[in-house]
Amino acid sequence: MSKAQCALLRVIRNVMVQMLNTGNEFSNYASSLGDFVRKIDRGDSVQDIRMLTAEVIEDSRQLERTSKETSSQLNDAGEQITRLKEELEAARRDARTDPLTGLANRRGLNELLLQRINLFLQEKTPFCVILADIDHFKRINDAYGHLVGDKILRFVARTLMANIKGQDSVIRFGGEEFAIILPYTQFEGGIVVAQHPKQKIASSRLRLAESGRDLGGLTVSLGVTAVYTDDTPDTLLRRADDALLKAKAEGRDRVVGLPPGKPNGDVPEML
Image (cartoon, rainbow, N blue to C red; front, side, top):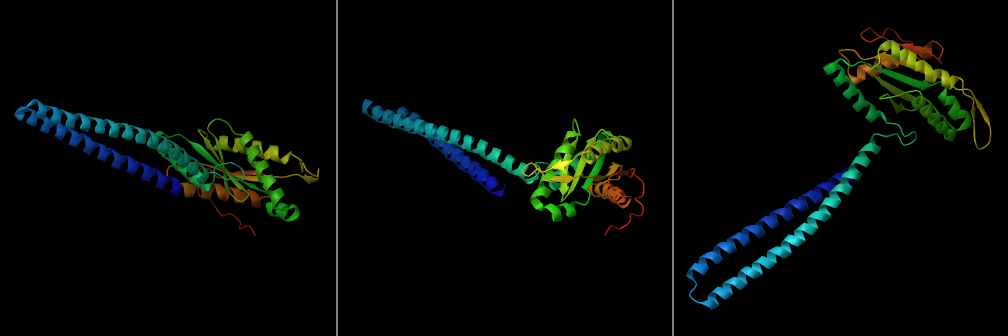
């Protein structure tokens, strides 16, 4: 991203210098025309007028060449700027995307939460936050290796994506944890929505395509909350995380919600 930004600024600076130089050329040409008019008024012979006219014609041709060069350089610069803008946008997308799952990452989540909170404060548009965590994921990595663990992460990401709609978003929060943002959804609706991927994942039987090895079942725990007037991204995520920890403490493979605006309460510490 930094490389694309520097290149874009360099092209723009070059364009500005070129425009300044071209402006100077036009200014000089205008000055030459002024001199020509004054000399014509004082010209005593046809030969003098011919010489002055030749000078103006040469200045005109030089300005024409400069204009063509400037036009060509501006066209090239325009193409470079377009390409660099596309590279910059791609770099920004990459900076907000998790390469393993293709979902938005933690940086993208923070930006999305800020947008949604601002919209809530301006228009009272509700939304829910769900944190989902794969149960006993460390055991999966230890038993089958990280490559299988990556396949599990992609499977969960696809399942979560398949159970949302409209403007809902799924984000890889970090490790084996995912976040789901549900715009225009009240707290109770978030509880209902969270049940769908939980049940879908719990009912799935996982098998490795290469070897046919049966990996057995998989479950997830989910914590749900909704936006409140005094919320920041941190308080929202903390409340959703407290709900998730409560789901883990109560036995996993379940959905637990903490309503907005209420104390989080004592959540058992998980070892």
